Image (tube, rainbow, N blue to C red):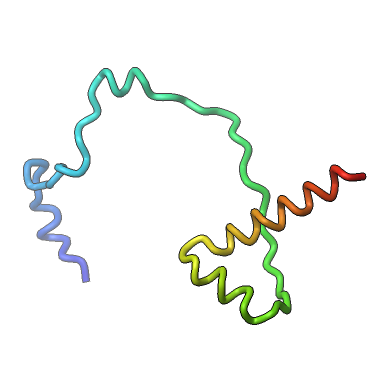
Length: 84
């Protein structure tokens, strides 16, 4: 449960901003505004039957293993498309 009374009583000086340094004018001047970025195409959830050791190995690589699998399949598809 949120303690709203305590939160309302907090003042700016009570906030620890040590991990979020103030943005200087120099930093702001170097900022890049990006417009019209292309969004990533939507993903499709699929079910595949694979040899048990294949997904096990990818999972053992840690976080992002599904992205790795997708990148490998993407490279294969792109290579095959370019052969035609």
